[in-house]
Length: 435
Ligand SMILES: Cc1ncc(COP(=O)(O)O)c(C=O)c1O
Image (cartoon, rainbow, N blue to C red; front, top):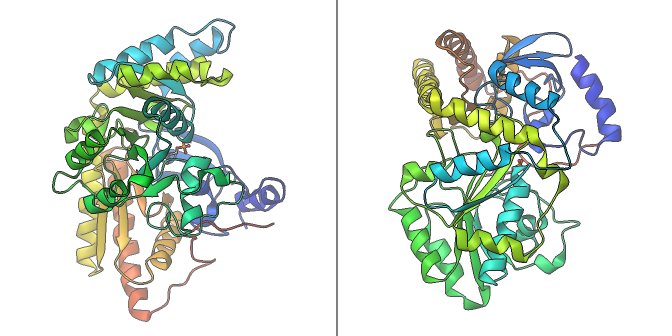
């Protein structure tokens, strides 16, 4: 057993689930074998507790480290900020700079607020939107964080989140006052949204969704959603925590040419440092002053510095073009080697966040085998790749050379009907872990 797995065994006894994020659990990649912990991360390289180095083709910090890990120029600004004090009785000027830049990029918006995590930013947006519309209820599509308002959808139907996020999500501990307040609709299925609004008892004041992620909008889907929102006096919120600042500089809604009433950013804007943002039309955002939204750590200076410096670099170096280009090389490589070895795959996602699926009943088993074999070859890899400017053509070619080999093995074991896994198949649902 590697050192990471040994530590994880101990962690599970004192930390429920062993860590703080489901998508970083070992079990979501390679149960019992995944390195689990890191000593150091630099560029797109990661060193585990056994000092083994891997290239990260498994999401680059859950899609947040668009400039790579421990980016030198970002570090310089952050160290300066640290030396000048990251916390103080007074406020950090960098907060105003970040608000200015986000509002400049998104001309439709007039005010910004900041916090630290994505789920928290969604909660803030919901509070402001509710205060504005004075309507309690929400129509949603996709994932928007762990808070009560979101998870409560599984109280009226325990399968509501199965297709939006994950099967098996329980609602223990969620206040029952939220029951029946949050209704799911499906992406690219405008009728599923219309149905929610048809029932006036639903009293929907907010529509929250990702403008796009796994699939692109079809038949003017986003425009139709916007017109339903307008007709029903509901606030349209685009959650761009993952999609923002990836395929383009700014929210992906700018590229899709549909502006919401509010938008939320996180992850990439701070290259992995804790910072998230809510922007919106002035008349809506101003209502934030009629309710109480406030937190000490939201004033931390480092998050603002990280975001200002990251945005500067994303803009100046047109990073979205580079990472989209890398995404397309990877996509074409997957197609080339799947065709060569005659295996059936499908690819979805943005140019910069790609998802690989093996079109077989045992997709999860095949992905686990893929991860197992890529790990032996020095790559953290699974079904999702988020590209980073820390990649280069040489590193991507190394990755694809191994993909070629592993796809060949996959073909071989597909024909045999069983894959030689060292541990269990990766989890695809939320499971209780015990030590
Ligand atoms: C679209 C979207 N919303 C909300 C979240 C929650 O963000 P966080 O994990 O920072 O709380 C995520 C995280 O993956 C996300 O992708």
